[in-house]
Amino acid sequence: MGDRAAKTELYEAFAAVGKALASGRRLELVDLLAQGERSVEALAQAAGLGLTTASNHLQVLKQAGLVTTRRQGTKVFYRLAGCDVGALWALLRQVGSAHQAEVERARAAYFGPGDTEQLTREQLQERIAEGGVTLIDVRPGEEYAAGHIPSALSVPLDQLADRLDELPADGAIVAYCRGAYCVLAREAVRALAARGRHAVRLDEGMLEWRLAGLPVAT
Image 1 (cartoon, rainbow, N blue to C red):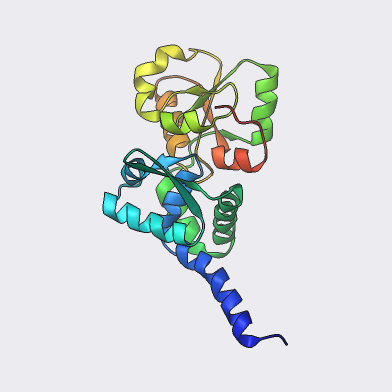
Image 2: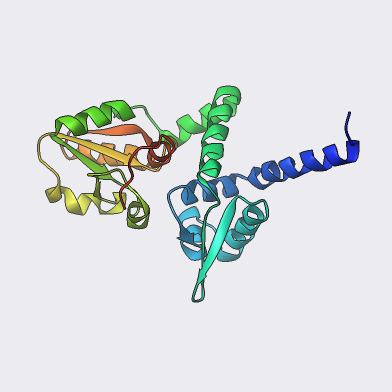
């Protein structure tokens, strides 16, 4: 049977990970960190949190061993403790989508109408191999710098309207962003379509690309 107290202690140690993830705001921070290392200030801004609130959430994640830190001058930078943390986040989303009806309702409300054409990772790889496709990364520039799909151009969503001249007037444009639950690529495809460009989006994003062990450029 083993020692009951020791077994309880073991399961409580596992539970610490679940407790750390039991916050939508902390999950959003994990999602951001899956794109690459960020400072506390950058994470707070990206997540729409106050600096103190973001720091408190990050400390909970750090105490659970899910993130690590490094200091550069007066700034503290966070990163995921390992690729397995990103995989855990992806699996949590998958389980939630399969077994929690509210996930699908919230997803539909967040993404809006299903009016954007998409392609799979395999289809994107085929198009890249064939040539004639322009791949754009519409995440913020710091996320692109931390790692992106090879051959992708960095065109952050908030710069897209001003950089249309850099994109082909004809031919396919493929946009991608953070992951399957990121809205940036959808918004980019809608914006391009409104300007008469043929654009589609990758149905996943950088998180899934990394987890699949595919090449990443920096």
